[in-house]
Image 1 (cartoon, rainbow, N blue to C red):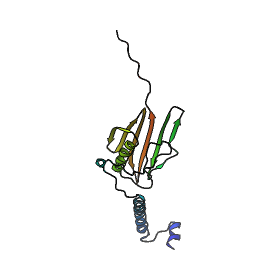
Image 2: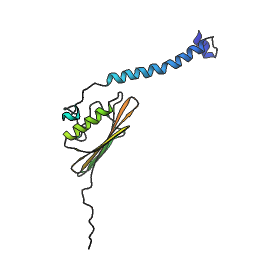
Image 3: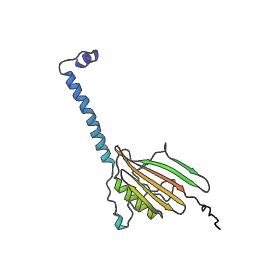
Image 4: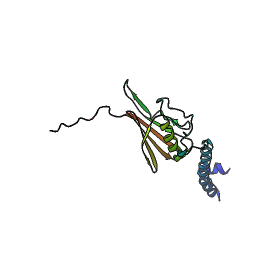
Length: 175
């Protein structure tokens, strides 16, 4: 009865207060439910410390695109954003991953990539870590930049792989 009259524009004493309470409570219930769902999908793991020298997740899955770049199984590739350019002599790519739904620990991902990339023959060039982390690796004439960022209820990872210039810069002839 109240709903019929509400739809017609009539209000009963107290119906506005009930409606306001419902409108205020529903978003909190939804956010709480999503948080619980996100937390339940993240698997706990005890990553190895960098001092121990062992790789985090020794059975690290590799990307299907690059045989020597490990990616945690919790990350899912975003096919709509990612692309690979390949010729007989060059293979370069920008590959986007996210952990939705779920959040992966920022620090654990840094340790994971540092340990596993080195285990696959990459040399860590530099690491920038603040709100977003960027790790740069080198292997032969190839470079790999991995960016880790935290977004609402998820973690995003971007892997950029390319080649360095193979030719030496021209030397000046000085008398």
